[in-house]
Image (tube, rainbow over all chains, first blue to last red; front, side, top):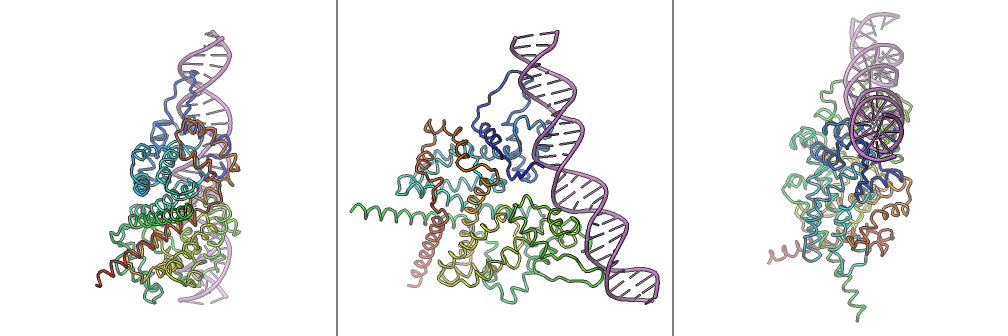
Length: 261
Length: 261
DNA sequence: TGTTACTCCGTACACTGTACCCAGTTCTAG
DNA sequence: CTAGAACTGGGTACAGTGTACGGAGTAACA
């Protein structure tokens, strides 16, 4: 048993190796046969597999056979599965770096673009929401996107603490909502139970509580059709978050102006 | 329970069984020996184990031995692990129902209380953030808390769509931020690498990029100490979200007033 | 021509969820 | 009072996981 491999990468040496792989100093040697694979190919194959079948279906053996190699061969390139996932994450962020870099406009336009990009990223790679990315194994691409997003809130009256908090707030909202929405979509696909049938079964049990008047708000909201309407929660929430940030900024500017007088 | 499960639990019958367990119609029979366990005890043991050691450490065998039973005995009470986790989730929500019910005040005070409660819940049960809760296997307690939270935004000018979106926005922010923060805390505990040592290793690789001026904002924010300051991202973000909702509400009221004239 | 450093990868082990099945227990019908 | 039905506990087994270990083959350097 390996130990808690919540995402692997444990131990000083594993961390160092992982970072070395991300920040790319190949350090190749001439001796012995030429490697048949590359880290890039492995990461690519893993991402494709995760995109298509989800994180739970991702196994070292399956990646290896997809590449026409033996299972243990992967461990010549990558120290363990956790690090491989870290590499996948950073690779995914690469897609956004150049696009994010091109964004112009005021803080709001930029933060909005940042939010939309992150949203689209989660739609492309839903498995990203399942990887425990709390421990910030920061690769060059994820750091670059963070750096760029921080630019959006620079020089608008925020302290550094607040700048970071602003970006984190947007990111938290986007990832949180994405997790709700996307996993909901996946579930209906995976279980093979259509949405209406699902609600029918639920209703069988929830019904009595509704009749008893114990869930008045859900009844009201449900009867208005809010659960399967086309209303865009992302747009609504994003507007809220940005409006709120605007209010914070206005407050900072007001106090700054006071101080100058 | 009868062995009649066709698709093993993910199908229609599994869903129905799961809901039956949550909404509680025990349907006990007199024949045979009295059961030595109860669903409640199993769920309780599972929650305790997940609280203490995380979701990945939770296994049917370990729960069983913690209860002094054989591994397969659990399957007399619960059709599979997925349903057990659904039960755990709903059980956890129970803790909040009565507290949430007692909240009074205007929409903002109530939503704020709701957010703080959810935040505290994730702090108590960090594994909640790792369970794939996309498929909304709605139990009585999670539905009750949702119902109560919807009350906060009733009769303030929102359509039903918007009411739902408001609650979802707050919830998305809280869960998203909780995932970031809590998993970060867990990681430093679990890997046994202290925060400063962690950043030291990171710096070894990130350093060159910083020196090259490729990460100007991260450099600036980092040097200001924002990464390990005591600044409360939750408070900041929550204020933003609520301010933003306030702006939406004000906008609705303005248009409604226009229409009346 | 060794020697050495490197490659690929088969085997093995400690785990996982859970299907299947049998022994033992308790109530009920005859 | 007894036969059988209905039930519970749980052992065994299987397919799957991550990965430690070590052996076999290969290519460059001495």
